[in-house]
Length: 125
Image: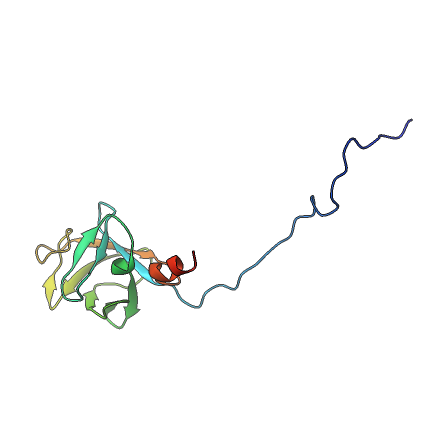
């Protein structure tokens, strides 16, 4: 049987895949999502609102009894801090509604957030 001729030269490393692994971060921030998918946020560190996008205003860190806003330090109380669970949120002992205002208590879902603040990621671009 005749030998098969190569039609083109292929660099020797072209078909040599590599596995790259990264160390898992020690912690991640959290998101608090309203039922419509918006993110609970604060710009001023005193009031809450919901927004359709993620920036530093929508990043929360777990603290005893609830969450602390990662940029402003605003603390909110929640009925749970468990990832992927639903919770009620209160600010200064007042229930928070689905739009982030004080009002009838609404459920927010605790979601997995980023390792760093969004502004930190933007600095690397």
